[in-house]
Length: 113
Length: 113
Image 1 (cartoon, helix red, strand yellow):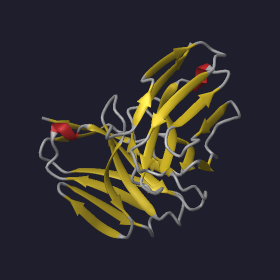
Image 2: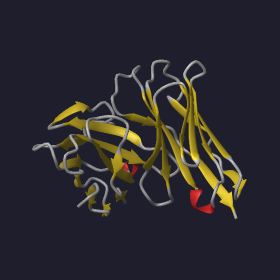
Image 3: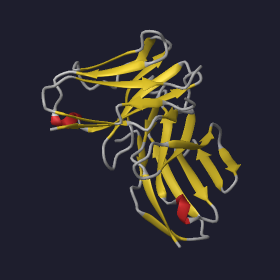
Image 4: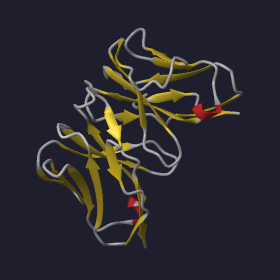
């Protein structure tokens, strides 16, 4: 597709379960970002990939969160032992080289019961 | 102190008026500044970028940057009801060494027909 694609669009899970969120960036974009957004807040940075490597993972809140981008295209955000506080919209964005002009996907809304 | 601060609003203006949205940032060496628009339930989309002091105009939008005062603003001329959205200010902050955008919490704009 032409834009950033995220799946699933909605995920409801129970506390303690494992969740994977997928992002397919715009073709040719080397930089990929994960943010999460809670109601009434701006997007909060989680991790940034340049190619296959995590260039900056300083925003990951704890070791329950992990993300990969093995082939430099699709990325998966993995959350272990989910907690109710993890409930948010998880946004993926890509850009040509890693600058501020980001193209966002529609997000994955995660609800932890 | 938050890195990027915005008044949450709502800012209400009549149709046809000028809407003025303001943003301050804490890192003196921030270099890149962006305004994103986010409609309710949608993901952010880039509307303006500005990198040097002064004004930058694009259609009905004007971004203004004053690095000495550490603020950036967005003016929307001839405001339309379709401009009603949350406007997110974002910066690349060299202080944190992060090459990803740091977002403010956004200002909600309501344009009254």
